[in-house]
Image (cartoon, rainbow, N blue to C red; front, top):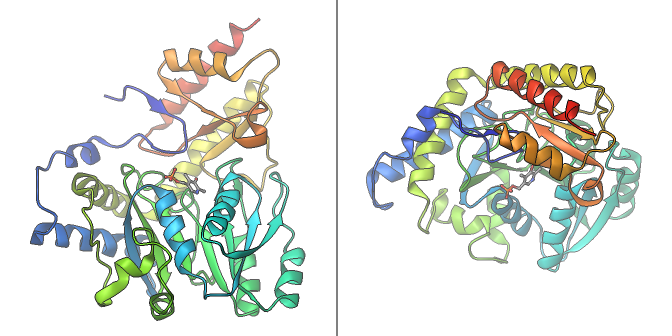
Amino acid sequence: MKKNILLNPGPVNTSPRVQQALLKGDMCHREEEIFHLLQTIRKNVLQAFAPDGGYGIVLIPGSGTAAMESAVSSCLSPGKKMLIVNNGVYGARILTMTKSYGFSTVEVQSSWLKPPDLSKIEKHLSEDPSIEVVAMVHHETTTGLINPITRLGELVHQYQRTFLVDSVSGLGGEEIDLKKSHIQFCGGTANKCIQGFPGLSFVLIQENQVDRVLSFPKRSLYLSLSTYLQNGRSHIPFTPPVQIAYAFSEALEELLEEGVIHRISRYKDASTLLREGFKNLNLDLLLPEGLRSNTITSLKFPKGMTYKTLHDQLREKGFIIYAGQGKLESEIFRVANMGHLTQNDFKHFLNALEETLKGRS
Ligand SMILES: *Cc1c(COP(=O)(O)O)cnc(C)c1O
């Protein structure tokens, strides 16, 4: 039974099969079964997101931020700079990470409601040879905006720099071609569009980057890719969340059975249904068409409605919506459509939203 319909961007509603996998039993993480389980997870993530090869994967215990911080802490040569595209809370988070490691950075700030100006980024790349890594968020969950990763990747490639992408909320929900977008490092998590539980995340790493990463001094023990890449293989030298891994493995089986392309279309269909419903309720969307992701819709508050009222009344009906973040906190609310949900769930939500809005004033 689905008790709460989660319309927040992770953790998401999981299938009964994924939930059952949590109960596979107690097991020591040093036994053969668990090595095999983690190996199967790695193989299936790669099959889902890098089917043409050329990439390895590092599994990191922790939520998506753990994967991103491991990639950020591990991808830069000593003395070099990272350029960070900041057009939302998650771009800003990458910047905070680089600062906490004491890295030199170039921040390219950009409107939260527009794709970044690539010519501005190109200017930095052409003028500053010490910029080694360029980082951008694929799907800015703050607003639901899709950033132009392929076009930026081409630019980064042209200037022979390294491209780091946060696709924590993109993988499984948006099309992404790591090779075509010239991505060297890409962070992801088990519990958004892959429909597992929070607790395991991963970094997809282009194979030819592994030796580079291993040659840098370690800036962290737990959140360093080289900790996991030593001994020539991706390995978790700490206690992994075994039950979360059972469920992640099941979620990946489901993803591959459904097919990544079909998962993406299911999400796209869900967001189309929701957006038609929002239009009928005279709600205004924050972003113009063409910039919107398949899995998040940001909506302006209707007149006379606060987030608390809207949230609490919908919660009573079994639906959990999500607040705006940062400077948009008092202006928008968000409705995500990730997870094991059906068109019927979204139709029921639209009915509940209509009732809630009618009851206002
Ligand atoms: C959710 C999210 C993260 C952080 O993931 P956690 O699992 O909350 O640590 C990072 N980047 C993006 C784009 C996200 O949506």
